[in-house]
Length: 423
Length: 213
Image 1: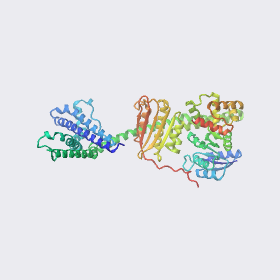
Image 2: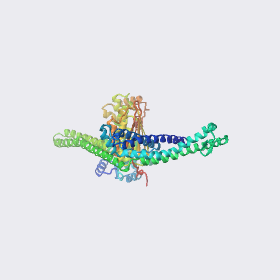
Image 3: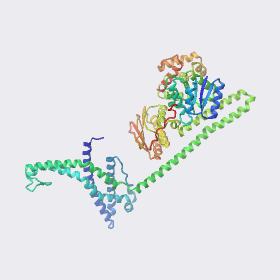
Image 4: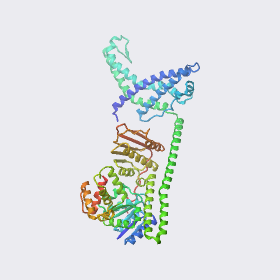
């Protein structure tokens, strides 16, 4: 957290940036307006695409600033029609693009509203600086009609008054910067946020995608379970039945051979149980069901060949599907750290900030993990997508690697262990 | 010998009950967590055989009851059975450091002699760990290079020692003489720098502690 002084000066600097942006908006807006008006005479066909691109660059710049400065990102419109369309088709596509018109409206109104708003502290500070730092030295050369604001500067005392007034202006300008910037933020959020129906449309598109992924993943999982049962436990039970049948027939004739077959059948039953155990562990690990995510991850840490340090700060349990997704993701990341990153120690941190479950897995391996290439990381990202979860990978070549997963969810209150009360 | 048996599935409870009675145990059977805790504290059993997953929560009810009872009666011998073995649970059972615990896969009851032997060993204050737990610990130690100095035969002996077996049992499993086993164990303790102990239970706990590093 920065101290208030630094924040104030930062706000003043940002007001300066925004006022330059307003100037740039006006310039690009003129070109865009000229392009739209010049469409009938053909001029628009040349100017519109670059003007629209310029407007979009400015509005996106403003959105980025808004997002970073306030810590709350602003969604942008869909990208402008691509260059590959051909000039005239692209022009029509731009004209029918809602984002372009919103940019144009923004560039029309923002310089007047937002621009004038941020101009207040900027002008106060510079005008005050002029009064305090320049007037005292130049008033003698400016003649008898020299005024500074409402002070006629014609003598040393009045020059001192002007200097004092200038200092007051600077002070007021500096102090005004933070509230003005907050006001500007609210204004910009109003005009730059995508309209609700656009956000909803995008949300629907995303939900459709993630639902398709979830359905695919589930179908694949069921197929895997069916195959594992068929090739594993089922096959072993069939073999066991045959062995028992043989043993029954040999019971009178060759008791010793029958005895051997019965022992074989017992071994086969043990192996069938092993198969079923592995299968269940892959579906929903018992320790996860028993104890929740924290202990399940500790259990993974104990099984890992690496030194895994687990820190859990969870006040309750996330919903079961979220727990399961996080568990399997962490399992995969631990495997990656051992197999691909050549890591020796791994640190896993689980916490929840009231809205989002965050799991951070960092290792001391050689890095270079790329979610665009590794199918594992891509798979995790897809599975987290079902819960609106995100995966961020920071893995420079040479390491270390830090993977952060975030899943929005609520925690249920901690289950009180039934054996904790004695009677 | 008095044994408290906690298992919620009727077929298994009945089977275990019969097996234990056949081998001369006096059995008190319960089928849920709260009843188990009461029985452990009131019946004063010589040993308890407890399924981890019990009603009413069907989570680790049995383990929680066992740990709770051992907090109130330290050293109360308990053999925990489960469809799964978790290193985490093994650690919790061993945490007291005074043995008289066992942790076995339910499959092991199919071998009656070994199962009853395990119950007796736990009742006598010994430590019994499922081979699955030990195999995992050993493969982890191997990957981390902490037992690379051992010969293959010494590794086998270490595995059986960690399961809680006596020198005599190890000798018969590996088909060697007891003195050969004693030689191997001495060499293992020297190589891994574990303080040797004549107390069988302390020996198991020391080996497990080494493997958990």
